[in-house]
Image (cartoon, rainbow, N blue to C red; front, side, top):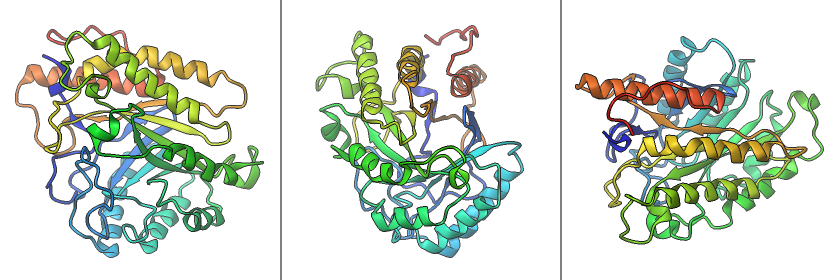
Length: 345
């Protein structure tokens, strides 16, 4: 059994799903920065202003600020019952949290006030594009002098030349512009200054879709080495564009099927085989003087805490093993030495 049919992507259900409710929440995952709690809220404009073909979450009914605040409070109450130590919340809204039409100031301020009262928050991540993280937005956030830094979740996805054609997303130069914007807020800061060492960081998303590294129509089979090197090059490009003044965390998300693209889901087992050499690249980067440490996080949510459940016990066992392996990597940067279940390559 291949890993490509063993998981649901981190963004959840297929296009057209109903808005998330407190009864469906993403499971808490632990990484080297603490517990990662995800809040999937609504877009107060309706559909996302960006129309990326591969994205299965940018279309949604319009939500009011009051409804978003109520949903956040319900999700946060559920999370608080499970959180036992440091955590870093991630806020998504089927669009851009830094776009005041898609996520009002009332909603954002409420969320900031809630987390400001909790000394366990290590940093807060807000889903964003560079263009919506405008100067007035950054100035307003910096002026609050929050006790924790804010990271912006930025979907670079890939630096492959075929990415605009395959993904329908054009963001050439966007990471560089984002880093330049954030750098000026962090300059001259030191640990202990204004309650935190830096103001803004980036959480850069890379999507693992093998076709990004293949010629049109080429099969994945037999080309694993080229696919692995393509993902490694994407990682190197993120690190090359990073700046010592702007901390960067990197989220790897296996591609999940969407109706708008003709590709099958990425093979999670293949990604597991690629992870150790990717970690070596990050370790080498982190040894450079003056750098904030960068970590890899694999954003995979399997059947758990809502949604359909695997009916086949053998399949459920494979899912459990894969989730264990990925959870261990997220916590330590290493894969566990557990024997693989029969059927997993």
